[in-house]
Image (cartoon, rainbow, N blue to C red; front, side):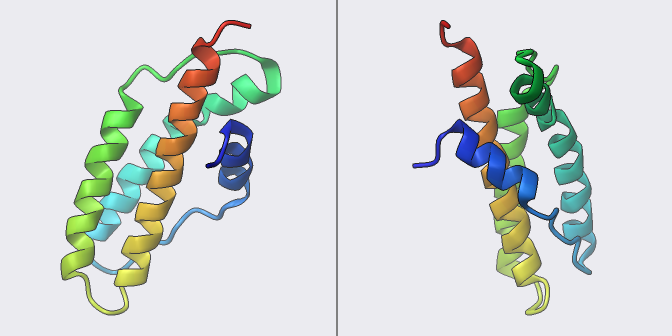
Length: 109
């Protein structure tokens, strides 16, 4: 199981996934970019010790997005399937990272 710093390190070094050619995948890509921006609050925690969760429910947003991408993967063209899977994997990593961030940030020091 990945711990918080493992997930953080992977995320910081992972390229952002492509958008694909399907309109729905392009929208999912846009939504993924938006939630990725909310997750950047984790950087402030790692670099400066400031624990300030995002003002939106990041985990619920990621769960909904992953479900949407799963449905898209079922109907995506052959060339868009790897894109959908990449977007899903990236969202799953964000979900894990943000869950760990909340756990670590809420635990007593």
